[in-house]
Image (cartoon, rainbow, N blue to C red):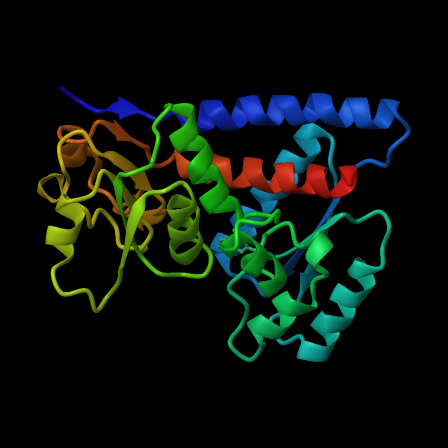
Length: 280
Ligand code: GUN
């Protein structure tokens, strides 16, 4: 029997409708319109696409958004000066610097410069630290979106074995933390993991966040598992995930499609964080 599809597009749309309503209520109460500043350095085509999707989503729900495009050769000081300006701008409640940055820029310093209260990406070490101790924080958008998907299917991670493939700061490490906080037993796998397939086969929850097109095959998956595919890759002119959908769909209990699974949830969580920042 094929897996049940976790329809991230539909769930994200519901969240966006709720946010649009919430913004109307905030405005009726005399509060300021939530504002997001998106900073894009250089012209990486994927980053440009993601930024335009984020801007469009802001507009749709009623968030004020502004885009700051900087040339690839911008200096660290120029970028930091822009962040300082946005930190002090009362129209702006959230600041997002699209990653990755060109190699000559110090990503860590840039992220640390964003005021933690405006860090709607949840990447500033203050928010990462708060997340790790289970304190209130802006959660990074993709992991927060994955947890929403798991909650939507009423799946309780407590006592389950979760395997995360990938150890990035944006997805792998934070999703492992969030699953741990929900009492899953979590393993993080990476390029040096000895027997990746054996690890994956034990997973009740399998999160693939490696950026390798269709790497996870049906025979890597425990029957009935929840499979979350974070990958967005191009193969033969098609967008595919890190999971080989057709073979995994035959074994898993639930699966997120690509596109239409995790991707829309990332944007919905960014909008949520921005509204929360404005409503403080
Ligand atoms: N690059 C890939 N994913 C993300 C994200 O969630 N936020 C930012 N700022 N950059 C990214």
